[in-house]
Image 1 (cartoon, rainbow, N blue to C red):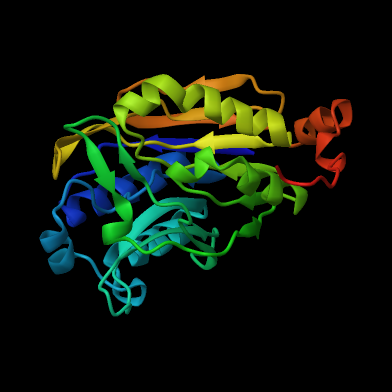
Image 2 (cartoon, helix red, strand yellow):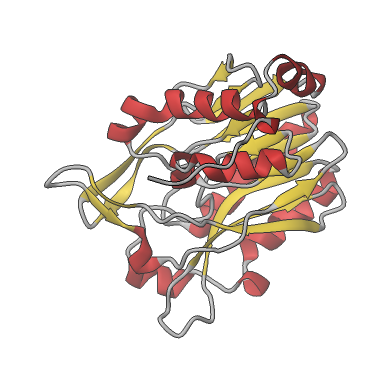
Length: 276
């Protein structure tokens, strides 16, 4: 499978972000990619919650999702939409951070709502409370594709290794980690965590990322780490996109999954134990 990883600097202009995404679909297809992978919140970053209430939509009314389905069908390429910020009908008004997998006919074949919320205090000046604006999902998701099974996750999920083990034991060959990773944690942990998830599961790990400065948040300008990464099942980095926006391409040999698991079959070696 030839994968195209999109690294972008999304802002609060939903229309401009959608145009960039549709262009990426066309460019990925022209370059021979089988599937395009986009980052977390590809449709909107750097907007206040008040502005989000004005510009975001329910899934069925979302113009970005509709444009991506149409673009995928025209190009005949699959699209893994890292996630979109979407309105929900929840009474507390919280949004969904939802990823989609769209096939080459433009049909949505899977959806996943981010389970783990990024509620952290990185410093006195940089704090995040994702759960105040987004409601968490409660279901792990695997999708079948012509190349292998894909296990969904989003950004902060990366720190919860049991999710990825469950996805791999349920048959995932590729784990996706679309992200908008903060710079301090990206510099410290991004590469190590992604490689660990690949090594632990014997899966390919594909992580398309946001990069650059996206506008104001409660803590000031929102800056993301970039470095969209492709990691092989043995833990080697196949590609690192650095910090510039753009498309990256990587060829995946899915036979490598079975080879890695054949050497170390740890996914079959679980033992029951009493918790401390």
